[in-house]
Length: 387
Ligand SMILES: Cc1ncc(COP(=O)(O)O)c(C=O)c1O
Ligand SMILES: [Zn+2]
Image (tube, rainbow, N blue to C red):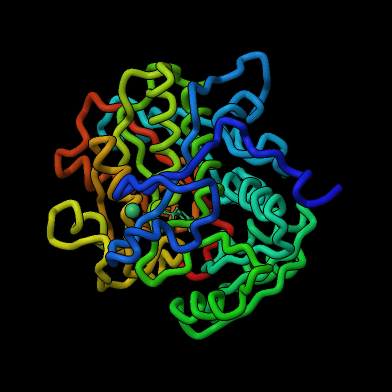
């Protein structure tokens, strides 16, 4: 079987579209985002256009239910997705809202939500004849991509900084990936651009002013929204709190709900709330900065969602759902780990931050007593190195 026969593209997919300027493009891989926006220094992601109407096939189980809305139906699986939704009445009472639910993404095979993105990235890479996938990652994406590349039977080159914690390094090594470490985050992108040639498929963003990870991978995050619909039907929570860095997760969840809205399943989208360790999106939404700026501040204790950049895709997801951004310092996220631990949920700092952000939003009157809130818990606490 040749690579090209291995994965068959969803026939509904007929083109791509820039999420900022709306320019249409043929189906492809736009590793630098929208060419037209890039030329104007506006750096924006492209997304995939599906023709006609998608639906949830209720005769099937798992992600097969959603295959009309996903790029490849035969992507490799390690048992990702279908994560539990918990109701946390004691937590809701303590915070002072009607209900709090969690979506336990840390129960994915490599312990983070990234496992929803990588099946489609390795499928796309294989289908297009690449023999290697590569990512720039501080940890979770490297571990997940290594696992899915191994499952797919292709090579993986993870590029990280010298400070990558040993536990992620080992996960990458044990799944057979090559790990390259460089001094800074900027060096990671340079290394990839200089070495990828036409054999390596980049899973993650390649630009200093970032656009997004692979548009094909982001499609995988739509499954969170579909699964939440299957759980709650039209009675979805009012707000979703989501740990955010480049906003792949945030944007994918938005597109999933947008599909459900377009296809008549829901009448309104839940508000998405970006949780960050320093005010990046917060400043952009306040009109004090743009998605092209570099934001000062420390985020070392929440390295998985750290760094000084934001993306247009995050801004889009927040504006289109009527949501907002909240930031709490990374040092407070460390306290959030033990606070969430008291409810039995042991999380990575970058994931526990949703709790601090919820409390802050509630104090500031942006979350109300009658609200039902869902926390997307992206990663487990066994990855915390120094607390
Ligand atoms: C634990 C954790 N939560 C959230 C995120 C947010 O990801 P995104 O870049 O999609 O905003 C990441 C990304 O690396 C992560 O590792
Ligand atoms: Zn554009």
